Length: 244
Image (tube, rainbow, N blue to C red; front, side, top):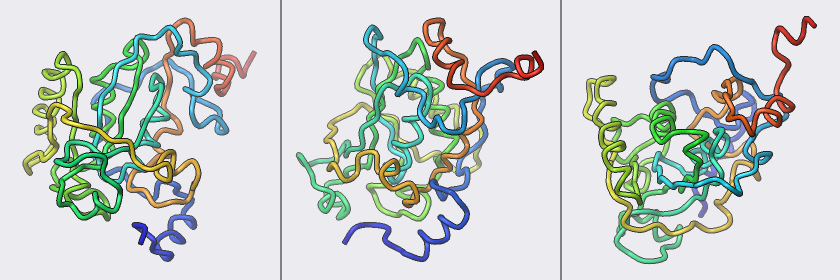
């Protein structure tokens, strides 16, 4: 039986027009709101689909934050993220199926592989976004989902990222009285999830998710020079442009 099939819950989500169905679980951004930047037009949900990453030196980081449907959808929309893949990480088995993962015996975490361009978005900013949309103090739980597969974690495949990740998790403690439960660890393994789970909320806009995707609607983008023309074309006119 597929997870989260509550018809009533899906109906409530649709009524409130929340494809994400989630309130902000984490804390506000620690980064100041940029004074300048572009806000995308309402019909542009993913700026990265319009950008060229061919010459970019791409990096990877792995985020576990509850159901991977919402984590994948959220990070896919952040400027500078070239690709996101839902999968299973840091378990004890090999090539697990979803049915095996939900049993919890092999302790895999639903995890999203985030491929990004550090010239467009920093690892620190990506981690900050993760903490904005999860509760890092809950153990084996996010939103309505409970189980070891829903634990939160940041897993790095590049040892150069270790200090950044560990310091970010340590610094996060200042915002909470409860102890931070988010793991900061090397990536032991990662297996891509079934095709059914990939881009799930793109294929099922009213599907369940514990993350508020609408929090990204009015985020300002400060593009690098080679992206500026594309980003400007796909953004709402600025106030000074509207008056001209």
